[in-house]
Image (cartoon, rainbow, N blue to C red; front, side, top):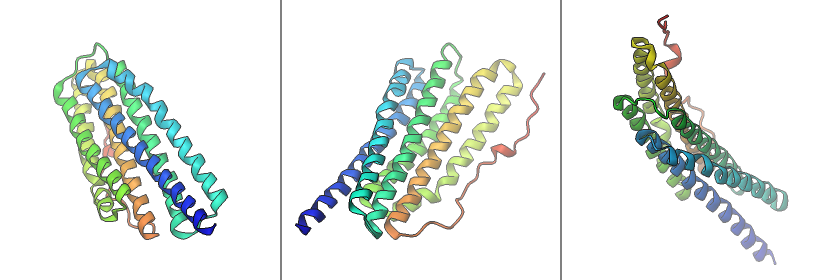
Length: 237
């Protein structure tokens, strides 16, 4: 009887982890598609991203409900409890990633008819390439419980910040040079900020994996390098 209970508990934990991995794959796809929709000005793909964010939200709720049920029924301790807490934390970050991808897709719809300077769009695309790589690595690290790979993502968090700050300043320059650029550049700024925040959520997942594997919280300060908030700009009248 005891063996059956332990086996059933292990099955519950594996199913919880499987759903998190599934949700991670869906969130990753939404980010990739939202950026492609921006680059290619593909409103149909943007609409698809907006619709498919719903199933990601549903998965997050299912994971949370299942986790709470497991805690109530099994009263897990130590490592098992960390598995459940980690699944809930990561699912929450993945849900936010899906929301940010959806927000980018909505910006694509708002940009219909606007001229896209490819240089600026390429800057957003380059940021997204790095963030998608980090997201893939950290999701693989969760699946394999590879704390070392997760920490690599955590240590690279500043790279995306540097790119965002550079793009932020470039977009502001375009806006100051010609007020007609303000609408487009504002939307691109929001898209770039969405991607930068997705990188932050990937870093959150890395921290959770470290906690899951070691039982310890990361106490070091993140290597942040976003100085965009320090930029002072006077817009032309």
